[in-house]
Length: 232
Length: 350
Image (spheres, one colour):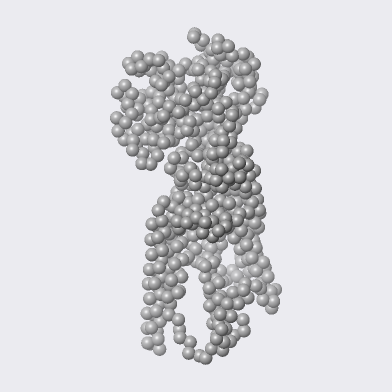
C-alpha cells in the first residue's frame, strides 16, 4: 500500500464505515433511551412550570462556589480543552470544507444556500495555537487523573481509551500541519483522518457519548427537580 | 554527426562554453547540488560518452515525448536530450516497420548490458492484443529489452504508476513498469507529462555520475520530487492566513489567493513544478490560476475528483450511512422494548 492509497482508504471506505458505525451507534443509544417507558409520577407537582428546570443546564455548567476549591482545576482545564477542541474542529478551513462537503455530498444541499451565511473560519496559526493549548490541557487532566488516588480509583478502561482517542486527532492534526517527523504529508493526513475515524467508532459506546446526551440529561433532570420543588 | 561525447556534440551544434556552464549551474541547482560541483559536472558531462538509449512507448498519448521535444524553442536541455544516442523511438525515428525493429535489435545487441531503457506508457496485461508492436506484445517487448538494460527510466505517470490507462475500470489490465521488471534499477519520472528539465536533469545526472540518482519511496529522484508543491508554492502564505479563492473568478482568485478550496492537490503532490516551472520557466498550473491535479502521484485520476478539496471525504453513495440510520433506529427500538419488558416483569413480581 502506498501513502496515496492509504490516504484514499482513509478518505473513502474507512470514512464511510466509521460514519456508519457512528450514526448507527448514536441512534441506537438515543432511540433506546427515548423509547424507554417513563414511570408515572403520582405525586402532586410542587411546580407546574417544569420548563424552568432547564436552568440546570446552565447552572451545572458553572462551578459552584462551595466546591470550587476541589473542582477548580478540572473546571478550568475542562473548559480550556473543550473550547480549544471545538475551535479546531469547527473553524479550521480544511475541517469546514469537510463539513460543507458532508452537507453537500451526503445530505444533498449547500450549507450557505440553506443557512444564508458561509461557515466562518479562523487563520491556521490561531487554530494551531488553540489546538496546542487544548492538547496541553488534556495532558494536564491525565496527569491529574493518574496522580489523584480517588480519580485513579474511579477511572476505568473507558476513561483512558476515550482520552487517547480524543488526544490522538489533536496530536496528529498538529503533526500534519507541521509536516513533522519527515513523514510525507499525505501519510500524516491519512493518519490524522484515521485517528478521527477511530474516535467516531468508539464515540457511541463509551463516555464520549456525553457530547450528545449531556444537555438533554441535565435539562430533564432539572425539570424533574423543578416538579419536585428541589432547589437547583 | 560523428561526435562520440556530449561535449563534442554540443560544440558541433554551436553551444558556447558560457551557455553550457549556465546550463550546468541551473541543472545543479535544480538537483540541489552544491555550486562547487558545477565545474566537475561540466567536465564529466562534456566527456560523457553518448549513451545508447532505447525508448519504448506503450499505452501512452505521446504527451511525454511532446513535453521534451515540443514544449518550447531550442534549448540546451533539448540538446542534451538530442545528445544521447536515441537508437529507437518509433514516434521520432524515420525508419518504420521491419527496419525500425531491426534498429532496436541491433542497438540492443551492440550495447547489451549498457543501454538506458526509457519507457513511456503503461503495459497492458489483460490481453496481448491491446498493445503490440510489430507483432510483439508490449509485455514481451519490455521484458526482452529490460534484460540488456543498465537501468530503466519509467517516464511519465503511466509508465511509473499506471496512470490514466490504469484508472478505474482499467479495461486493459494496465500496470506500471515496476510491476513487470523486478531485477533492474528503475527511475520513476512521473508527471502527466513530466517537466522537460526534470527529464533532462535525470538523464544528465545519469550521464554525469554514471549511476542512478537518490530515489524516494516511490522510486522518484529526490532532487526533483523531494518536496510538495504546497511547500514551494508562492501562494502558501495565503493558505496560512486563511485566504482562499472560493471560485475561479471571484475576488480571491483575482488576488491570487490559495486554491485549496478549489481542490488543489499541492499539499500531497511531490514535483518540481513550483520551482522548475513550465514553458521555459514561464509559469506552472497554480500560477495560471488552476489548482494542482496531482498528476505525478499514483492513482491521481481516481483520487476523489480534481475540484474536491483534499480534506473532504469520498462518500460515494449515501447507502452505507442510510443503512446505518435504519440499523441504529432498529437496534435502539429493540433495546428499548427489551427494557420495557424487563420493567413489566419486575413490576409483576413486585
